[in-house]
Amino acid sequence: MDKFSWIALRAADGVGPVLFRRLLERFETPANVLAASPQELQSIKGMSPATCAAILGSSCQNFAEQECRKLEQSNIRLLTFLDASYPRRLLETGDAPPLLYLRGVIPSWDPAVAVVGSRQASRTGLKAAEQLSAELAETGVMIVSGLARGIDTAAHRGALRGNGSTVAVLGCGIDVQYPPENRDLADQIAETGAIISEFPLGTQPLAEHFPRRNRIISGLCRGILVVEAAEKSGSLITARYALDQGREVMAVPGPINLRSCRGSNRLIKQGAQLVDCLQDILDALAMDLTAKSQSTPLFDQPASVIGHNFTPREAALYELVAQQPRHIDELTALLELTAGEVSAMVLGLELKGLLQQLPGSYYSLP
Image (tube, rainbow, N blue to C red; front, side, top):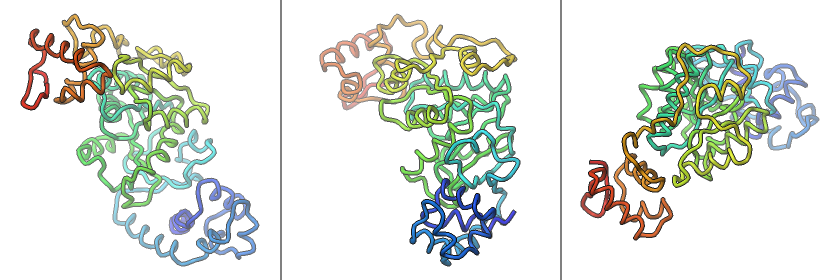
């Protein structure tokens, strides 16, 4: 493969996935594009004079030379959408990335399910994501997520626990460790699955990269499962991409008092498949796979409230404090209750020995 030409063309300012594909349809190879005349290039729909100049200039070629040297010194491979090992399901989307950087093992890619959700998930949400991912992995389904904190991390860990394959799609360069605490997890994923990114080496995890990353997560999969998502979150962006790509959208229901569940609960109200066990996912995706272990309901025994007769409000408060110590003002804001209502609940849970007060009106588990 002519890595240099592929990288140079993709690096030219103004050449996105759609224009890249149009150029290949006309010129067949990136090398032919780079050798084309300005008149030939400007005949392509969507080609501006500035983009034409960028393709024919030296900046993108200098960048490609540096990138090729870095690749030669690494264990990272490059997949183009003309390669047989490029994921076919992703290729069918309208804006598939021309290049994918990959570290690890090229997986079979299908069947695959994306599992995404909040970075600040509750214990119940983390448990649900890990359990469902493990059960899916045991059936032979590949788990796709974004290696972020919270639900993404739980999904990848679940897939590994289920002895299955998992793929992490990054919003930064594949050689950038983000988040840094998932370095070891990324190494584990690469042993049997893959870390992939469309971004050049060294690209930092900027906020604008993650929505672009999300279209790849959904594009790789038959469906997407959302486990806890706030009303404005990247997970809902992924869900919108999934709908646009004709993928099935599923969601795990959560407590109505948790802000981190409002977006995922709203997805269900809008028609997403409600999921509380493995079979719900298999039915939604019409997959006839046999699990190695029996599917168990998620909500028979909520992870952090087992043995406690909580009201819904108390359960929501307890889940928030279980994540990390919380100031009483923060609890009041997150639960959207009055200060008096929260104070009464806190006192009641303290008397039961389920909460303890820390200096400065903070509360934690005992």
